[in-house]
Length: 307
Ligand SMILES: NC(=O)c1ccc[n+]([C@@H]2O[C@H](COP(=O)([O-])OP(=O)(O)OC[C@H]3O[C@@H](n4cnc5c(N)ncnc54)[C@H](OP(=O)(O)O)[C@@H]3O)[C@@H](O)[C@H]2O)c1
Image 1 (cartoon, rainbow, N blue to C red):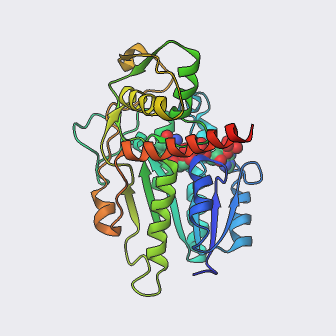
Image 2 (tube, protein in one colour; image 1 turned 90 degrees about the vertical axis):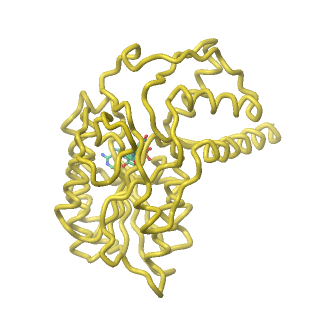
Image 3 (tube, helix red, strand yellow; image 1 turned 30 degrees about the horizontal axis):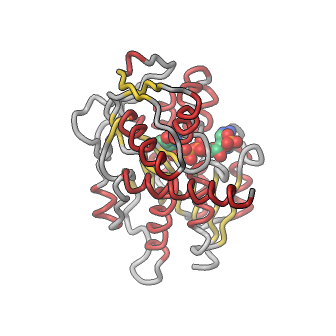
């Protein structure tokens, strides 16, 4: 297991960053980042995979700027739609496992209950369409793969809703937050930890291997909230620990906050299949949030005590 070669794409992204830490005890991890690895150039992907010959490839790289994707659909498709298919071809050629991340945005959000893996995707924006193209490309190559569908990713670093809210709370006395989109905020650290847990099972000398379990698995924290509920909870929790002031929070409808890309109203994903197949369940989103805030508090108190 120690000699297992693992290749990670998207080294400094939210999930990619956490993966490097969580996978360290599973094997020898090589992690690549843009521009040394540019997904708009398929030959770069093929060359890197053939040079590394990894047993496991994890793709955490993506064009994740949902609104920007509306204005640059070709680049978004190259990165999110075409590149995963190229990686899947190279993984299959080597007999390697490909782990790839997908999104709640492959769905239109019209369903009234949480989405299961067999629900028909119907993306309502360019990002969702390109991510769906990536999922389909991997499936059509037909090698060993796990597509882990997650939602509302955030963490102690990177570009995300939590850090945006903490910044805006210091700048504005009042914040209007969308309250009619429902989902499960999921920390990048939880995603990486769950990925490492699944891989540890697959690498186990006894009872390991994928054994026909290739497929799509939803992977989010437990429970649900709106963006408004997430903001209210995170700002209230952080007011105690990070000393952040809680601005006046006003719930608004999606229609009152027009953006270039449409968003699904229902982003809830049922994670039952993941639990039944790999025995993996992520924590409740509120608990996961408190752990991320602990990390931020720890970081800020270290900076304060060094000053
Ligand atoms: N963020 C979310 O809310 C969310 C929700 C559901 C699913 N997901 C999925 O979860 C996965 C991880 O997301 P994340 O939030 O960790 O993403 P992220 O923080 O935006 O990281 C994406 C990574 O991809 C890299 N990248 C961008 N363009 C590239 C290119 N042309 N070639 C190679 N790499 C490139 C980025 O590099 P630069 O930093 O240099 O641009 C970055 O390291 C993705 O598959 C995403 O679609 C995310």
